[in-house]
Image (cartoon, rainbow over all chains, first blue to last red; front, side):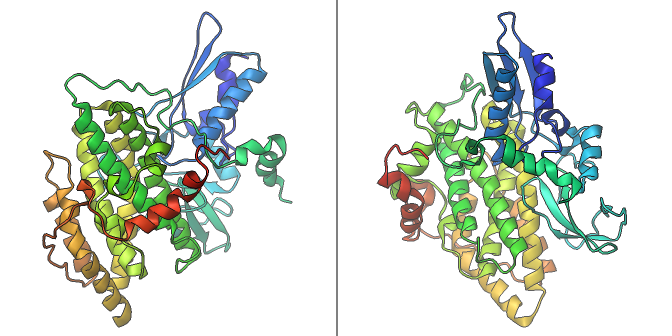
Amino acid sequence: MSAREIAERVADPELPMLTLADLGVLRDVAEAADGSVTVALTPTYSGCPAMAEMRADVVRSLHAAGYADVRVTTVLSPPWTSDWITGEGRRKLAEYGVAPPGEAPRGPVPLTLGGVRRAVPCPRCGSRDTEETSRFSSTACKALWRCRACSEPFEQVKEI
Amino acid sequence: MREDDHVYLSLAQEQDDSRWAFGTGFQDPLHGVDTTVPDGVDPAGLAALCLGLGDDALIASQRLAEWCTRAPELEEEVALANIGLDLLGQARMLLTRVGQVDGTGRTEDDLAYQRETEEFRNVRLVELPNGDFAFSMARLLVFSAHRLAVFERLAAGHPDPVLRAVAAKGVKELTYHRQYAAEWVVRLGDGTDESHRRMQEGLDTIAPYVDELLRATPSGQDVRDEVGAVLAQVAEAATLTVPEFERMDGEGRAGVHTPCLAPLLFEMQSVARALPGARW
């Protein structure tokens, strides 16, 4: 396997049903003539504690595949957006009970009070009779929802 | 066991314990980022700007984290911890940037754990102790509305690419923070007589520290009207009155703090100071 294929297959530490490629955080994999590999990652959130683990997992996987000289760099700009989660990633999220994000807003988001939010379909039963219980969940990138039809709570990857 | 539980189980089984270690010795959050200061950017000015914004985020995140196990509901605890985590991430990148450009080579840990109270440059608003939940929501609203306005301008036009990128990322996060705080201020303000009274009291309590925050805006920026418009919008929906923001002596950006900062730092720095150089 090429270095890119190996890096693409590394699982996200907090959403392990997704690979780094599915999540859209893998920005570049460059293999130099001398065999050294440089992998560029972009953080999902400023404080995402999984970044250190992602770096370590990429290095570990490439070492295991025989790439001895591996460097992981951080790319800050442009910032990650949930729009970079691939179609395959969205399918896997839904399959594992996590609602995928809708389209991320572009440009400044004005403060709106009392507006009606987009209905997020329940990833388990498909009902649109759902409500957001918290804009924040077990990780910074997710919100917490509840389905009124099947009574199950579920998480949703936020649009950002 | 549900069929799809295995993806989480594999995390615990396949790896050694190192992935669960949350302690010291992390690679800095700007690892592998081009850290050159562009021509025409004054390194001292850039360092001072990053230090103020970094300290604001660091101290605000400490106060937010204090709500863990004390918030009215579990969901709010999780929300406040997540907001604090975003700010901590911003602080780590900004403080790392300070050490890169000020010529001292200090790390984020050096700056967070080895400075004295008067060396911190955060505005005093963020160091005030939590008390009533309504006070913390009033503070978070004003703080995030101001920081969002500042970061939007930095993201659009600051000459340092690292600060510009940190700000661009922060804008997305702060938009969520401002929304969260605004919704709570409206819910409490336009709630019962008791919640209304306490929400108004929260706004009145932060009022003496808001002018200092508004003055702690990077030079060349004017965000007063924008922040004022947000507060007016929220206050109207919340049936609250925005108090006067009178100018008060003292300035966190100059190292002049309230007596509340030292105990916070004492706690935050206690392990690092008791065991210098310790790694865990």
